[in-house]
Amino acid sequence: MARNIDWKGKTGGGNIGQKFLYLYLKHGSITFTYVILTVVIPFYLLINYKATVNIFNYFRKRQKYDILKSCLSTYLNHFLFGKTLIDKFALFSGRQKLFSVKIEGQEKFDAIVNNPDKGAIIINSHIGSAEIAGYFLGQNKKKLNAIVFGGESEEVQQKRRDVLEVNNIHMIPVVDGFSHIFAVYNALKNAELVNMAGDRIYQGSKNIAIDFMGDKAGFPVNAFQLAVKLKVPVLGMFVMQDGNKKYKCFVKNINANYTGKRSKQEQIEFLMKQYVSYLEEILKKYPLQWYNFYDFWKK
Image 1 (spheres, helix red, strand yellow):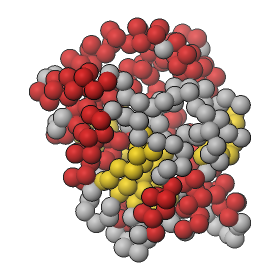
Image 2 (image 1 turned 30 degrees about the vertical axis):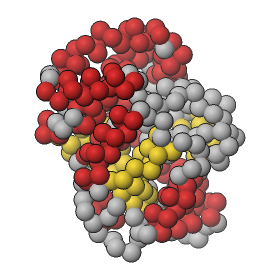
Image 3 (image 1 turned 120 degrees about the vertical axis):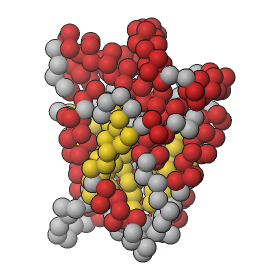
Image 4 (image 1 turned 60 degrees about the horizontal axis):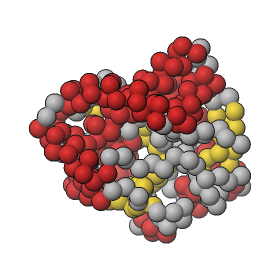
């Protein structure tokens, strides 16, 4: 099973628009930007009709909402997504002190950071705002390599690099489905940390269909194959909006319940199912923060 997703993952606005937003958010009111967002969203929903329908179907079919609640949730979903982008740009602009993050499972993150002999894979997803974690989980014991979309504008990539490298986080840009694999492999062999998404598949990449929110959906196997091959721990990490300028980070050991002797393929599928189960658990708490704007369950 292989398919090419419709969602490109690129931040809109172009270099000029993004530079203006950086300059404004460096000194201006973030709350006022949220207000502007409420006016812009209806036009965005109309222009990006296909993405709007996909999110509406997520609420209607997966969350089992009625039509009215699905419509309202589609609007709120886009509003929260816009807020995460504004917050990210504000952080790029140096306003970290305006934001707070509570971490549930900090000890699990600390355990892998304090282990000098073994690397680890940190799996996130396109829910909440995984990138926000990088601004608050800074540490100087282990290099953390973040797999990021390589098609972003130069402005976004440079600002992201400037802020995150201060926290010992380094970017591995992905420009196709396989370009990052060797860099990830070498990082893990050097007992470093690797942060990557576990919910995006591309043409030619290997994936497995797993039960997810009432139907089968494809999930990529690369991260879990590496974990089994190199025998490194896997952490699930999700960073969710928990109020204005407030976030909550959830950290869980994905392979904590692994017992018994199994084949490598069985181990891979076990880890993937654990990750998908944890993803479902988070979406029950934060159903509005699902940001895969394409038909995720497409056969």
